[in-house]
Image 1: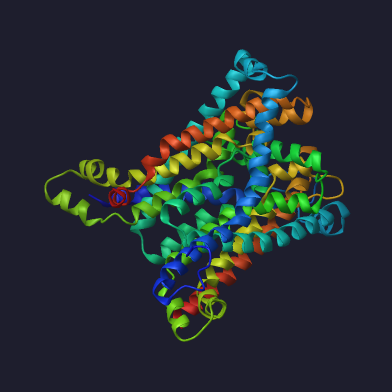
Image 2: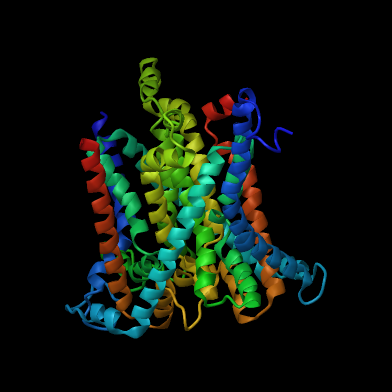
Length: 294
Length: 261
């Protein structure tokens, strides 16, 4: 009764009612976003999934084909391997960088943050082009390597080149979560550990590292997941031996017009993404947050 | 004893910073190349690639296409995303947690899978290569960024201010317009910027749903790169870099002014 008409009720219950009315209204505020999500995300993904089972005829044929063709499995394995390498490179480059961001003064910190954000200022395609130029056989990086006397190294159209380019694009996604966790770590804890006789390495390993782990997990998950679906960078920097799953999907759909096989590959990639996300998400929660949840 | 370690750490960071920034900077000298090649370091000096960008109808049409799509997308995404952020803010935490996770899924769905699906839907509904098609897809991709930006400023917004306004006789709309909106304006503005950039820079979906009649700048850049070594791409990159730097510089300046006041 109250829920049906809240405006005619006595003042004593009005506050309670208004809150309820608020909640109903709150849903309507979110509704346009949800509708858009259903039309532009739900429907397309549903169609991809449907076609993976229905084209050319109903059944598991496209999945049987995908997992029965060695080339596909090689590409799937490579997609995971490249993503793992990219994540590792980002972590090795990003961890010390994020730490320094927390340790320097405010002016220097601004410079370091700007360096992280600058890559976002230029279109992703243009940046990949820059990598094509830097990595090519007659490019700057190879000139440096030759000057040092190590001979030319094949970088463009190789897996190494793809990893270098992708890691640069994804590094900000590693540094920002690391930094946001690291800035909450009380550095006096390290001093305390040192004053109790721990060596710097031990103080780091037993105090700082465990406290920074939520940031490591959060950064690693997002970088790995984004890397799995990368398309532009591998397409421009890679060669036939560094093809990733996304390129294969695009090829099936646009060149071979095989929606069933392309769809099956898409579903495999989608499931891999969400399984990883579900498995890893609890790890990246900050301890004090999980504490308050319990 | 501590000094060498610190220097080493500093050098390491410098190296990482160079790695982050180099590909952005490298584009600038290449745009002044006087030969039609993308070699680095470039030879000679000329403005011809900038001239080409502004006079070649292929490039100018794609720039205009991108700007149109991005502006409309930014407006829609900001309205839809801001409403959603308000709604989420007013919900029970468990419900809003689930909805929030759902609403930001576009950020993690692999681009090509999404693009293939959208392409399939658009082929059936004749939206390929249309303004509506681009705006719909880009708005969906941009809404999460607006929700995140606006939610962040709502989190620090003191709701008692709204109650205070109401107790002084303001209607809910007046309280919203005169109290809430001005206080969370920075969040909405940064959401708007993020939405614009998301659309302006989006390529994967655009590559699938593009047509000769409506092309966006990233698509044009991509096809130029895969076709030949045209330094016009570098000129575009440089222009984008300068424009964004100016916008961000102005933003920082305004922020620091307001901070000092």
